[in-house]
Image (cartoon, rainbow over the protein chains, first blue to last red):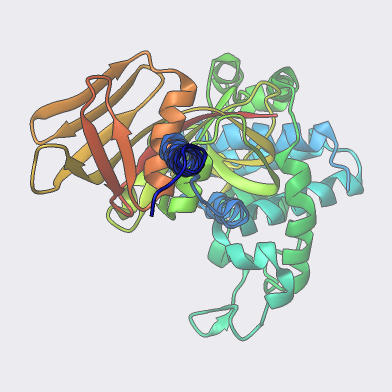
Length: 63
Length: 348
């Protein structure tokens, strides 16, 4: 099948758009990943438990 | 419940009497007479004498009673309050000074300890723990003629700079068997918490350190340096059965100013196949990590944010990744129960 010039232009345009979209998606994903790696991970601790333990320990005589 | 300055000053003065020539048995009879004289001269009303007895009861139950019952007197069960098969009495847990005070104010010291005593302690400890005593008022108690007659050297002794007499600008508290959560709290600069129900501290650093070191291996340990600008606290010291601990009952809000911590961690170091045991030390001067004899991280003058992130990262995460200034990567895993933390705090 022989394609006209206009048809060829349209196919190339669509292909290029698809490639651009893919590249943009990959870029976004890479940025998100980098952001996640760079952000300090949240530490966890139970403050309520720690205060209760500290108060109980302070109440113990040092004998 | 209000306790007058006169009551607190007499309790402090009697503490000094029990420190003075404390190893001399031949002074024991004179000491008892001095206690009676001090109470007679210093406390005029029956109410004040009753209050002195109440203070001694509360102090004795915190320092040598059952800590859990001081917190929750409803758990008191006479069946558990037994000593050698008989109901526990004051003579079982009180110091000679406490018994002498009880006798001098006419308190029935021979009675068994009961729930109402613990209820009283729970009410009174926050009051005496946040009290202040004017040192001059204590010294004045030693100026009487009867004191000079009974113990000529005591007035001069009371003029000296004795820790048993003066109010404390700095208190200490040793802790052991601490969980990781509590160690974490102790490294939160600016954190405050309420300790207003009356707790046990010491004016002797040695006592606090001794207690901290007394249970090695059972958990993380800590030592609080408690700045006390308002000089609050009730000096139990020689009035308690454990005079060597130099205890001060304290009640107040505590704020953490700074910390210094040392702990162990498993370190996975970039370029090495096997993890190694690392010893990590962090203070405001340095962030240091040693592996064997080698210092692998040695950072001077790190910001508070940086050292907090490092410490909290290792304590608060299963695995903490750290990139040193030279670009080398480390992964640390905290070794449970290994921390030793010194805390600089203020009693607000």
